[in-house]
Image 1: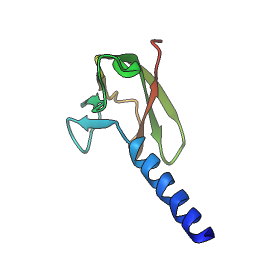
Image 2: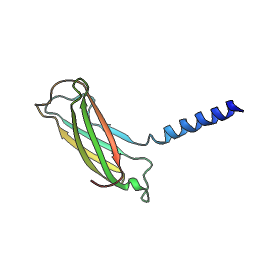
Image 3: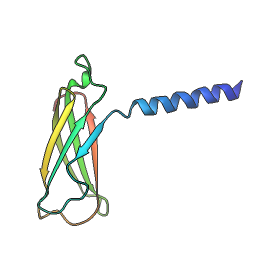
Image 4: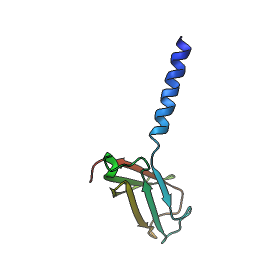
Length: 108
């Protein structure tokens, strides 16, 4: 009996983890140099006109992995889509960066 409950609990957790993965992000390139323009598009495939994700705010955090320095930006979400462009300044140091996308269900 305990094994069945444990299996059901694991199955429930796995299904919920997959359901929360509903953001598709595309970039114009895979590697960027100083002076390049980073363009991105975020789509919410589960969007419907009655859904709360039709409008909101997309927070974009760019983090230097070596120094942990973070640049924070925000873009509007309209009709389930957020589109943005960033020009990479010559002042940004060379290195590896993580780009994080955070969803806020209200406008900024």
